[in-house]
Amino acid sequence: MRKRVDKERLLGVVMISPSILAVAIFIYYFILWSARVSVSKWTGLMPDYTYVKLQNFIGLFHDPRFSIDIRNTLLFTLLFVSGSLIVGLILAILLDQDLKGESFFRSLFIFPMAISYIVTGVAWRWLMNPAAGGRISGLNLLFDKLGLDFLINSWYTTRVWGIAFIAIPAIWQMSGYVMALYLGGLRSIPQEIREAARVDGATEVEIYRHIILPMIRPITLSALIILGHMSLKVFDLIYSIAGKQVALDVPAIYMWQVTFDGLFYGRGAAIGILLLISVAVLIIPYMRYSLKTEESL
Amino acid sequence: MIRSRSRYLLYIPLVLAALFFLLPMYVMLVTGFKSFAEVNLQTMWDLPQAGIKLDNFKEAYRNLAPSLGNSFLMVIPAAVISSILGSINGYILAKWKFKGADVIFPLILFGMFIPYQSILIPLVSFMRQIGLYGSIPGLVLTHVIYGIPITTLTFRNYYATIPKELLEAARIDGAGIIRIFTKVLLPISLPSFVVVLIWQFTSAWNDFLFAVALTKPEAWPVTVALNNMAGSQIIAWNVQMAGSFLAALPTLVVYIFLGNYFLRGMMAGSLKG
Image 1 (cartoon, chains in turn purple, blue):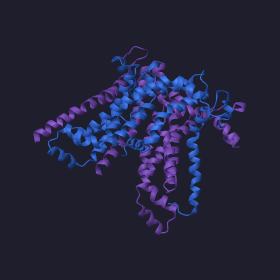
Image 2 (tube, chains in turn purple, cyan):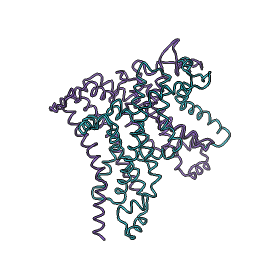
Image 3 (cartoon, one colour):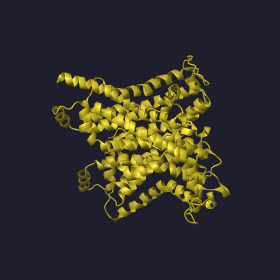
Image 4 (cartoon, helix red, strand yellow):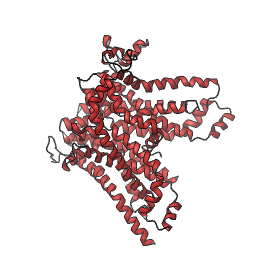
């Protein structure tokens, strides 16, 4: 019997090994390969692995465009993450009130998740059309018609702060996801806890503020990390709204352009590695935490 | 729960939010259904006045048809293969833990979160070396492999909930590792397969980065073709809007009919089963 189990366990390893091999190559070997490119001289079409120490990284930190990228990423992350959390939480609380039509609204708020960032980008590019005067259109035209002229603005073409407006379609796309996370948390709180607080004379607002919100704090942390790591990787959405304008540049777009348009492979790989490190700093502790809590269940 | 009549006031923010979420869809559709003659940026919010015309959708379809076909050709095998691999991996990791499995599993999972920019240069070089650069099979392979983490996770979490006794009963009947999988677990795995298939279908369909890095124009999936169409000066914005809707339609249809399964895939993506 023992022998049979051992033999079968071995067969199990054989069954999973193609996937392990694929992951080992396409993820870990490729990361090492990228790391090697990032410390190489490689520019142009032919690979050149001449070691240049950290020159590509040092170059990036002296590169004004990369400073813009970091600043844009931080600003975008701040607005996108906080916006999605706030909108998501509000929607979740609204849907937690046992209203008629709840499932319709819920589906509606989540559907943008099923759509590609490219589609979102194309549609929002026209909604956020900055044209003024007689050629006014998109949301600006709507604001004009509704008498909300003070809201008319030049959107993502706004100087210096253009990147902030990219957060709007991003929030549109992801706040439903946050809502779903929160709603799951709210639903797992037993009715008795709310009832008990009500009996003690707590108002609804107090119940949320002092009992429910503290209980769903771990969800905020998860959402923060998931959205944060998405935000570091943002590419498609900005690319489809604005193309490759330096004013709206982020590391993922710079990486693309410097590598495949500019053929500075060393520098492109360095950006990739920096992105990986920043994502890993967020995700590894989160994974450890998630896997640990899962085991204790 | 807020009781009292003021509950109905809650519909005000809900309806406002609904309008915000519907905005892009509204514009895509009202624009799409106008005739060419009627299309005008300054009347983009108005409903079609001259009846429903399909000019824009026809023109968009004419432009996007080959890439829509490519997307289907790419997405279906990618979703099916990565789901099958995920179910095998999940089964082994949940029920046949081997030495080192506790290290391997997080290492696989991490692949779900990495920024693909950090593997893009090797990926493109590698695909050129093995002769799959530029083609649909190369893109399928890419989606299959980078899909392994999430499909494995979903199946592992599901199989972990299956009681040991069920497997042991099958063992006593003489079933081995493969028979237990095919006769006991696979028949009850349909919901997980739906979750994973939908998730993989959606993410491969919506992918842009891999597609733009790995395919040549004749193999472009619809996201790349749409982005190019939107970037060109020749194709009018109204056709772009109709094209966006066409590109969104397949995943939207899946979402409308199988939304709950989609939601479960979404939760798995944040490690929340």
